[in-house]
Structure formats: C-alpha cells, structure tokens
Length: 422
Ligand SMILES: *Cc1c(COP(=O)(O)O)cnc(C)c1O
Image (cartoon, rainbow, N blue to C red; front, side, top):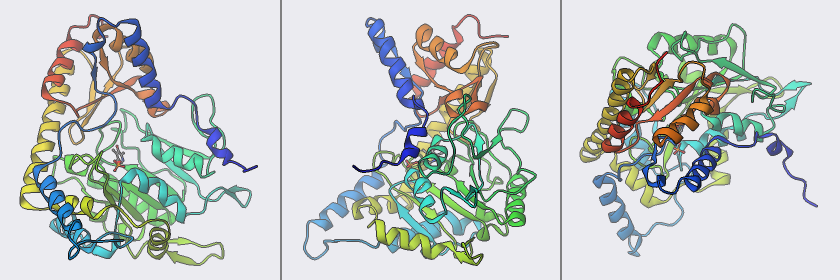
C-alpha cells in the first residue's frame, strides 16, 4: 500500500475559506428570505473584468495557434523571452533596478511559486533540528505556512494554531504591522509588502534593516509583492532589489492576479537573481538560479503562450492605462471603506497601499464572533483575522475588491449597526 505524506495530516482542520463558506451556507439555509442580501468582502478575489488590451492580445495569440505558420508547441520552461523582457523593462528599469530577463521565471501565479520554491531548499528535520529555521510574520498569507507544513518543515500545530518549529514574528498595531528583524539568526524568512491581510506597508528604512539583517546572518528573504501596483507612495520600495545588497539574499514573487485581474487566467513570475546562494550539506555556497532553472525545466513547461501574450499586453501603453484604472477603482473602494468605517466608530488600519482594510473588532468581541455578527445582523461577509494567525485575533479584514455599489452598501450597513463603539 502506498505510504502517504503524513505531514498533510498536521494541517489544521477548517482552513479559513472553507470554514467561512460553511458558516455562510449554514446561515443562508436558516434565512432563505435574506440569503440574497449577502455581500462578500471575504476572499481576496478581484471582481472587475479582464482589461481590453489583454483580451485583444489573447485573441490574436489564439489565432496564431490556429495557423500552421505561427502555431507554437512547447514553450521555454521558464517563460517566453518577450514576456521576460517586457517585465524587466516595465517593472524594474523604471525604478532604477537592474534585473536581467533571464533572472525572471514566468509561472502560473505566485501561489504556485511560494510553494514550489521549497523544492530547491532542504526540507524536514536535519542534524537533530530543522534543516532550515523559518520565520513568518503573524498574521500571514496561509500559503507560506501550509506549504512548509506539507514539506515537513514543522512539527504539529499547538492549541493556538501555531506550528512547532516555525518562528513567528508578531505584526501588531505597535509596530505598524511591519515587525522588525529578530535579534538572532534564521535561514529563511517570508515577507509580504504591501501586506495581505493587514494592508500594512513597509518603508525603505524598514526594508533596509531586513536586508542588512539577512546579509549579516546569511538568511534568504522570500519577498512577496503581489500587491506592488497598489503602492500609492512612490518613495516606498516597489521591489526588494531597490535596496543595495538584496540581490544576494532575496527571491521576489510577483503576480498579475491583482493588478491585471488574472486570478482566473493564472500568470505571475519570480525573480531569482544570479547572486543569491544557499549552503550545501558539504558547507559550500551554491547559487540558487541554476537549481530553480532546473526545477522548472524538469517539472513544467510553463503557462500557455496565449496567457503569456495576455500578460505581455499589461505592459503596453493601453494595458498600463487599463490596469491603472482598475487599481484606482479598487483603491477608491479602500478609501471609502477607511473613511466610512472610521465614521461608523471602527478603528481601521491598512488600505493606504493595499486593497485590504484591517479593522479592530468591537471591544471584547473576537474575530469569529464579529464575523458571525456581521453575517447575521447586516449580511456582510468579512474575513476573521484569527484565520490568518494568532496575532490576527481581534481583527477582521475587509477586501476592497468589489463594485463601488457593494462597497457603499457595506459602509452603510456597518454604520447602521448599534454597538460597534467602545
Ligand atoms: C493573491 C496573492 C497572491 C497571488 O497569488 P496568485 O497565485 O498569483 O493568484 C500571492 N501572495 C499573496 C499574499 C496574495 O494575497
């Protein structure tokens, strides 16, 4: 009989989004008359359709695929050059960052990459301890944690949901949801700015401190910038490579899901600079770029030509204008949520450089109790902060990915609630 990967059995039951769905279903069955009133601000999925420039490019690419002269079979395992060049010139050169097209690895999204990167790092316990000492911020995008659990990099979860063997860095109101580097060493740290779920954003000095720390301790930073285009302040770092020295200590994950509306299309990319290295069992330093290249060429032939042409179109003048309009729409929603919920008496964080507003629960009410109350009283579905980690308890996340009409309705409904104030 086949042995299973027993690490999967450590994953805590009731993963956040299925649990939300379960509670919403349950409420709808109990209240069929009001089921249609529900407004969802829970899952961070986009709502607005794909930009016209993307659709036009994909139509053209489909037609190329229908013609023997322009048909394409297997593509390059790490992505087509036309897209890698468009990214280097569109996302990095304008900010004075030199990333070579062959340091850019196209993929079907950064959720995939955040998990796949563990393929090239030592996993599981080694030398009586853990192969890698891994740090994550709390609250956190659950993918970083669960992929490490699956890979055997943790022990079991404790009663507070924290896994043995991971190092948790508390993101709190006091540190502006940007925890500083720890005093001691770690081997791998996941950072995400603009942050999901808190909507917090690091500044240049904060990111410089992380890079200096990583270089001091030979640590690897896995830097997730899925929300990069939502940064409203040009002075904030849009890439970790804007910080001197980051090319030796960081891998960066990008996604077209949120800026380009690609959540259903599936495309993103990872930057793995040639200068970043890890340590081999024999103590030697080994560059990660060849390992990551090998991982792709062995396990994948990347995403469809049609999709990569669609992603390329995001960098055309029309594509840029259309994505800018999409982001303005979502960030306009975030502004209304911040102002409206503050007026309603809530204490609100985030939402300035990210499409998420992080709201304090009414005093004495936990995340899930607030979730249930919002569902029951005003039929607004939010995401309970506790689902993102222990430090998320006492908060809920409201997503700005919505229509303007829904956002206005959410503000009106939450304003009408009686006892949100202290
Ligand atoms: C949405 C999101 C992503 C993007 O994932 P895709 O697989 O590219 O859709 C990555 N990281 C974070 C933190 C996210 O919220």
